[in-house]
Structure formats: structure tokens, C-alpha cells
Image (cartoon, rainbow, N blue to C red; front, side):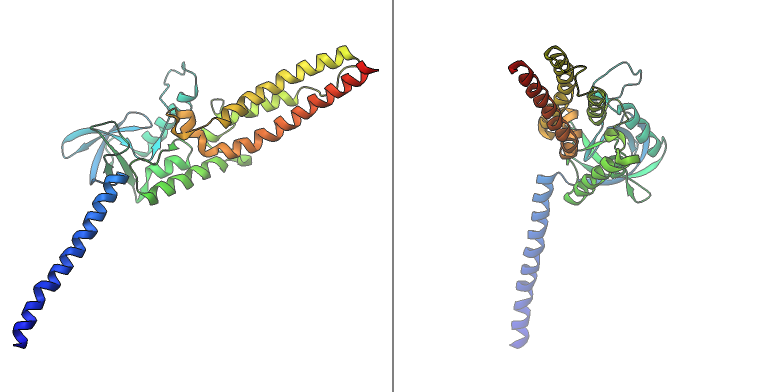
Length: 282
């Protein structure tokens, strides 16, 4: 009787285990559907790097183009004839990625259905145990998107982006955040501030005419800084343009540099106006 009862309990225990495992699998499946996590892990051969965003690979004899997951670079500009933020560091990003993923190299890819055009896939590329996507963000060659990667990897890319903002000499940043690169938003702010600093704040003479002349000259230089400041204030990673995506993470740092300059400049104009009013009233 005892033996029969024991046999009856075995299927019940097995059913419980089955339900637990099934529940875990369903939860993981739901998470993957929401987050766009890995749908395949392969070892592939690099055919060629197209630009800073796309790589053609050979997977089991089939060529396919994969988009880098979790990051996005600017458009290539091989002739250097195009201008604008959409092209900032685009050619450099291409060269950087090509050096890390040379033709014929064998690499591991974790592919996802998220973060790529419909019908295509994105991927995290791993070489020698290091994720190329993370290193690309750390070098300032790509901006974080959060698409096609796990939460942990998204956080790693965000941290790498923060490092790119403060790396380099004098904390200038590197790549997209290097204020010595003329296409970057940091350079535009720095250049406008430098021009403002060249304008003396005192009029050539203590007369209404000279004060008005100085006020106009100084206001024009200050307006150039204010225009960059307004552009920074409007940064939005969800705007769809590359400028918003690239510089929204650096918004607070950029405003911390722009705001004091604008505040000081406005005080200079107020002081000039008070000086003028005192003379005009006299």
C-alpha cells in the first residue's frame, strides 16, 4: 500500500517541476519579445564593414548585413564634402570599426530582431571576449540607442558613453565629445565662447555713443553662444536625428559650460545699459 502511494506521488512532483520550468521559459520568452534580446548566437566571418553601423558577414555560407545593436554612428562622408551633425565622425567611425572587424576575421555575434530595419537583424559583435559595441561607445565613435541589447549591456554602453565624454586631454572628451573636433556640438559651444571672450566689455570711451556701440558688439557675440545654448536645451534622444541621439546624454555637461557664460554675458549687457542710462539721465 505504501509502495503504491509513493508511485502516485511521483507524477504529481514531476508535474510541479514541469510547470515551474514552463513558467520560467514563458517569462524569458516574454522578456525577449519586449526587450528584443538575443534570438541567435553564431560564429561568423566578416566580409566587409559598410560603415559605422553595418557589417556584412558570412554565416554558414550565407551573406547578410547586420546592424550594430545598442549604438549608432553618423553617416559616412568619404569625400569630406558634406557638412552637418549627421556626418560628424561618420568616416572616423567607419575606419574605427573596420580596424576592429577586419575582412576575414571570425567573430561571435549575438543577433536580435530589435534595432534594425524590418526584416533585418542587429547584433553585438564580440572579439577576444570584448563587445565591440561597448568599445565603440567608449571611443566616442557611436551614441547609445538601447535597442537590441539586454539591460545589462545597455547599462555598459551608457557607462562607456559617459567615459567618452570625459576622456582625452583636459577632460575634453573623445570622438563625438571632443571639443577640438570642429563638427561636434562641444566645439561649436567652445568656439562661440572663445569669440565672446575676445570682445572687451568696456566701451572705448564713457559716452552714450561708445556704450551703444559696445553693447551691440557684445550682444552679437553673446547671441552666438545663446544660439548654441538653445540648441543644447532642445536636445532629445527620441527626436530621431543623430544630433539628439548623440548629445542628449551630454546635455547636462554642455549646459554646465554654457549657462554660466550666458548669465555672465547678460550681466555685462545690463551693466552697460545702466552706465548708458546714468549718462543719458545726467
